[in-house]
Length: 416
Length: 56
Image 1 (cartoon, each protein chain N blue to C red):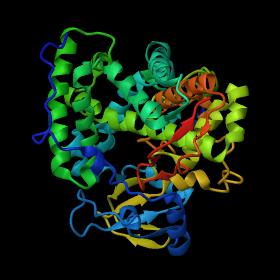
Image 2 (tube, each protein chain N blue to C red; image 1 turned 45 degrees about the vertical axis):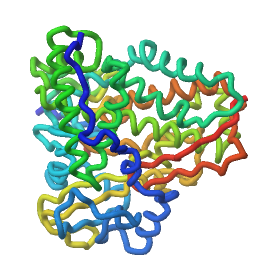
Image 3 (cartoon, rainbow over the protein chains, first blue to last red; image 1 turned 180 degrees about the vertical axis):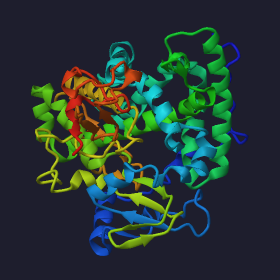
């Protein structure tokens, strides 16, 4: 299988996208800056979050692009659930150059048509088989590599590699090509600051997946590309270019977000709430609460953007057609009307899932159930092996940083 | 005249209309919300029936 499958490196193979991918900024607890902007300027006001974070302008926005920041649960919900007025069209430039004809940049009716077919592969009952066949072995093999050590940097050793390894195995990706593959996948995400490199990465990954898809259509297996090639709703299949774009996006949409969420969860538990770590050791039914509380307070994706397709007025602010609205999704999780004592991480909270950590509306995260499954297996295994895990006080306490994609950079722990 | 209700997913906004059913999912037009099994998933995002609210 896959005899011709060969990934092509960057024209400049020394290019390291990880530095640029960190263009998400070093802002610590950026939600506080967002909350302050809301309190100071009201629920709808001109500006964008990259600017608020002190970062470079959007390379993917045309010059003079008008942008607005939007706050408040109901306002955000109304925007994200009205795709005719608030479209993904702005992603048809930079994002599309990087990721291609992906589901993310589509609007109805095209989006609705393909979303239903994709979702079939990622429904809770459809992903269950990956738990034992993929997720648990990956988690266990990684833990086996460091379980006898006294101390470890947990992100490098575990929370970073595990979701990516799951994807590599879902795709049955050759081991010797994974490093270049990963580099290209991450580089696509820098389209907001460097469109040229993001486009090169997207093109090369696209070429790779085109060959993979053709091969797996001829010799279907149980890998994700084969499954996507075969899935159908009422006889309708996914077009090749849509599958290829989905696969190009997978590392960022599934791997990057899950590594960040799991890392954030460990910070919430070990830095801020070691008592709740102990509760989890004793009672695994609380794992769900730990995951939802993390997503509520520190979702790895803190905001969404939409292009306004007609003149509108929001909270008395007139917004012209063609403007972009950026919605502060992460603050929905801190809405005191939905979550009493909203800034407290509490794994026993009732209905913690009413956050927008996976966004909301037609573009709500397709892989949310797989993300929850992976985080559940990861946390359960860590609790099994390291019930006394705690922060290593020889290092500064970890901080969750970034403005759009949020995560700690390091997480040093004592294991036993 | 028979009256039907509509139910909306709080996660993705998909609306189940009892009058229309969801033939693509094998649910015939006229199927009442109460007759849809509890382990049914929203076809657009995978949430459960408990994540739906009736549309006023």
